[in-house]
Length: 257
Length: 358
Image (cartoon, rainbow over all chains, first blue to last red; front, side):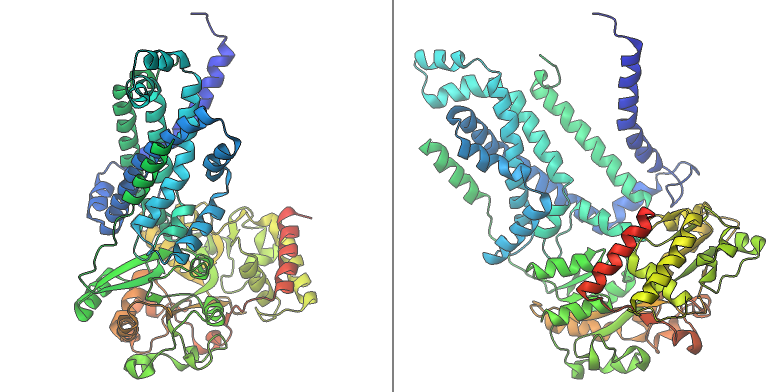
């Protein structure tokens, strides 16, 4: 490997420091024995104990996880299909339809989805939030999958067809394994987007439906306590675990090729 | 392609489960966060034999936007007076059946029958806060500064001693109201000349302020970085609780300006499409009981319009003149009225000029 100039290392180090130091601080203060995120007082597990007794916060976290898992599962299936269709059909209209939800400002999407649900007389709740999340996640999954397909050798599928595989079998045994890293990356992206979405969730959530971002935001008025740090740290742990699982499922996900 | 389409459709349909059947009675309260004591909720649940489900908002505009777009399912809302007015105009509220509210007599008459809802057809006062001065008692004493006048926030004569240690709210309406009060006008004064005077007061004081801050000033006060703020009474109360819990050598106290201040009264109202208006009425009457109303004041230091609550409120809160002002000061408190579109535009322009330093 060629030696990189020092300046590049410094710049990279500064970049990563900028990204990760705030996260480290959040985790550190979740163990701080003080209500204020201002100075280090002493080590404690108090905030975690409190978190596990806070029904509101736990219910919100549970809702968020449920919605994120559902939204990422469904939008991965639909998004993969959309990605394949985008790649095969190359229709301008189709790409606009699939990708528009990415470009539309969130607030617009939130309000229009709310009006849409009200129009249908659809009870706002977990289901409406999950549907909304699926709607905006599909586009992201589709983009990733299409990018992966673009890097794939189309001849492989054709060879499978020549050998007598049905279109479904060719997709199932040749295309899908090859684009798997893209599919998994899309699923992870959908999960992350869903779990931290605020604007769209705010509009589509009904009475009594609280997700983690909604809960934390409503607490800002009375000063955020380290309980929020504690729940954020656990979420980070979960995300990290997901990435590890995903990289086990598809080892090429984390490697550049 | 056809198969794909069919599969898509099947999946989309599978993703819509049937709404679960509701077994227990549920009461949906759309409230500010931390704006009701947990023990009060528990007692109400026993009283009404129902489950209280709370959803939170952090801004009146959030509540208005959500209801305007058609969100339903909330029984009781707790908006501030000017938002109540907007909801009444939007025909969003259910008139109250006063025969179900025997405890309504507990409310201090001076908080009833306001211009926002004449005759209290739709709303009943819940709790209130004022926009006042918060200060670090140690520092103010050391510097010999007064804490009972807006002059300490606006007059460079005082400000030069605390330069860079003062924050004011990042809100055009609140700051203009304070400056107008300082000048001896009404907080709801709409005279353009008076507004210009207020703007010039703000501009002269601005170089001495550390920031326009509406969110982190509680923390800054507690830590001791900021010594003097223009802020909400509940926040300043919270800052002192935090400072005491962190064993700081100082207190964060509330100063009620003698010129008067802005008063914000939050009210209980029932959504016109409330699934359970019966439970909402029960809740209103329950909260009008002195003890239940007092629990909130003891928790967050909010002002209390309930005359019966006084017996149950902690003495140290009761003797705080910023939370329970005497008659002379109470008469100088004003609730902010909504501005007309033209007035709002003018104020926004002045505010932008102030913040941009033009």
